[in-house]
Amino acid sequence: MLKSVIVSGKNCGALAKEVSSRLGVPFYQAYTRSFPDGEVYTRLPKAVPEKHVVLFVCMGKRPNHGLIEALLLADAARRHGAGEITLVAPYMPYARQDSVFVEGEPLSIKAVAKLLEEAGISRVVTVDMHLHRFKGVEEVFDIPAINVSAVPLIAEYVKRKYGSLMVVAPDEEASQWASIAAGVMGSKYFVLEKERSGDEEVEITGYVEAAERVLIVDDIISTGGTIQRASSLLREKGVKDVVVGCTHALLVGGAEAKIFNSGVIELVATDTVPNPYAKVSVAPAIVSALEGVV
Ligand code: R5P
Image (cartoon, rainbow, N blue to C red; front, side):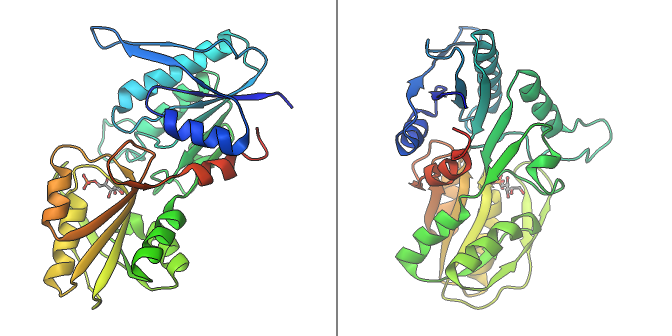
């Protein structure tokens, strides 16, 4: 087995370092910056030849920049003699375009998977990838891929702080995560219905079960519209407190104001994307995926 090294892209250092110390694998920080025109420059540390290079690239806040950083780091690792390359992408961008919804559209996640494979990446590890129309990561990638979940860690945090809460999925796609959270807490869950009419326009409807306090669980918060509408509906129906758990807190635009103005008392997010609500680290989940391959 090749000796492994962990190399982190620009925004992933803290998480990559935590994983490296838990696994006892050496950690190196790559150097990445943007040229004045926005192109990405990156450079690997020297410790790559004949190693299994485990690249950590956090692509949440700037998905296009992050993807190029991952492709360039993989290219550099291959050119400099890496024996094997694993990409740890805690947040996998473009996964929500998992279908040609309207004629003329690409199948974005497949295009992204192909780019990563062609860059020489031989394995992908990701967290709570937005898998809906594809049932598993193995249907997306032609290389070995592991998708781990941060939801048990989020549910444990919430249970420690608030006890077992009724869990709500804001839409059908989130029912997979709601069911995991309810399983961890030993509670029930129900699923609302979402109708999206634009990037920021969603309507949430559905039957609400009475409860004093509930946990809404979703994989991604982008503009905050989904959580805002779900929380407002729950409160209209008599729920007093809403706690939100989500893996990838992208929090674009005025998402935080929308969420907290809709009556949410706490947002529990993870560190797949740097954000102020990262109360749970996905390091243990990533370590479990890498054990046995590093
Ligand atoms: C899509 O179905 C995802 O699971 C999230 O619900 C969605 O990305 C949230 O987006 P927003 O915060 O903009 O409503």
